[in-house]
Amino acid sequence: RVERLAAARDGKRIKESLERAIALDPSMHDAEFGIGMYRYYAGVAPAIFRFLRFLLLLPGGDRQGGLEQLERAAQRGVLVSGEAQYQIQVLYLWYENKSKEALAIIRLLQERYPHNPLFRQIEADVLDVYFHDHAASLTASQHLLSLAQDRKVFRADIAERAARRNIAKQMKALKQ
Image 1 (tube, rainbow, N blue to C red):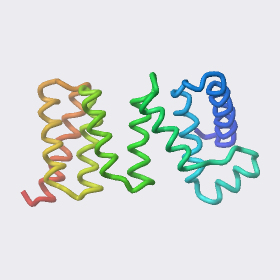
Image 2 (image 1 turned 90 degrees about the horizontal axis):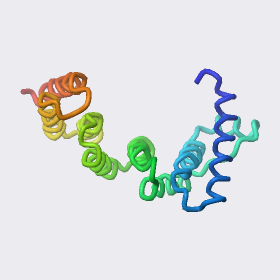
Image 3 (image 1 turned 135 degrees about the vertical axis):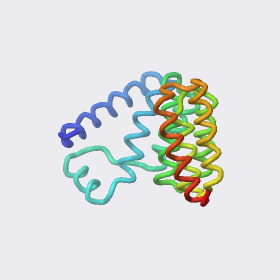
């Protein structure tokens, strides 16, 4: 969003609304997703952004507390549990240095959403980038290619191109 200040103010209002929703109904774990995302990212923001947040009177962050809320939304949420799991695996990879846990979440999402090729593609990327396991990444992409060719995933055409691209990359890395 180009208007960062307006986005920050909107985020503050959304967070406050979600907090009111939880105050009314503590079992509304879907609301914890939005609050958790805000708190986590506000907690890991670079110092300059934390300083600006202070100047703009925006709420502070809490990396650990935000992650706990996201995990509750993933486990107990009705509407956003899958999205919460997806976002948690991103945080695990980018900020938490928990690549094994992120890969486990991706594999659970594959089971939950078997027709979504993105999770297969992410698995191949994680195996390559975070584990440096070219053979496992190749195998994951070959499986995705098979699913795409059998039209067992959505947007099979795109999935097939992504799988072929990673297969070529991994075969080159393996000198095959």
